[in-house]
Length: 434
Image (cartoon, rainbow, N blue to C red; front, side, top):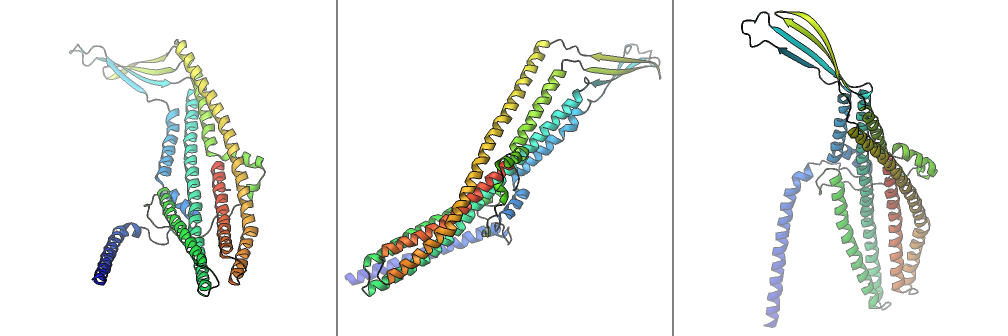
């Protein structure tokens, strides 16, 4: 009876797992059919093999960049409006409309008036609008620089996770081989069972790392797709290569600082804001002088114009208290803009120096890891493997050599990605490609 009960329980468990497997396959089929329109909307080849493809895609599809571009265009259209004269005014009046018998000789007075600001105000208003347009354009450049930097950094992370997964798979294959060697030696009495258990534990830990890498791999794909205005699960091509770091990053620090002063989008926008503050201050000072209204006054009697007159009027700037307050306000805004530009330039120069030093450190680290650490780790593993097979080295030493090789490969990859991240930050500060 115990054997029958045991067999019955085994059969029940098998039936349950068979039903669960069929249910999972059905759900997977439904999910595949549901996702098909999304995946099918992006015909191969998918973008993502190179970061340049993603940058081109973002230029065309990113909504934040499109909104910033449209706002800059809208503000640019205000330049002509700012310097235009106001529309003229036509006034017509009749003084004897209460006399119904005098319709043929009724007198109508016309006045055609044009407001004209004091000399120089129109030019200052146009220059102020141009400065505001330049500021909006600088913000548009800043939006693109920030977006491009995010894409470059996330692509570097995408490259890191993609190739880290490949390295982990290689290490898994190596560990499987080491486990077979340990099992063979244990079966022949040349090794202890502890060696096999250690290999299996190492395999489990590496498989856990692979699961975490796969999860983060999907996360970075979702982040890239969000920046590109694509569905989070939309496929990307596997990253093929990182960008070549140009030699210009080794320029003298002073040269890079000069480039930053000329091309940084934030400084460009702040400089435009400073110019706008200067023009606004000059315009407020011009409000001390009156504006004018000129007019022509034809007089119609009956059916013909019988008289002509001219007129001129101007406002009298008597409210000096309010004007002085406006001048003080404009002066304070101008001083604030100057201080803001100086503070921003100091901060950006410091950030640039930090990123350049970090880039050089990452390149030196990559050089050491590639040319020294990695060959040494490979040689150590080969020696440890040969020594273990002959009984001269224990299995713990062999596992340590395997870990050193894995860490050396990851160190090379991490250094490459760190250099790419620093390069992206430098280009964001400069506002242009190196």
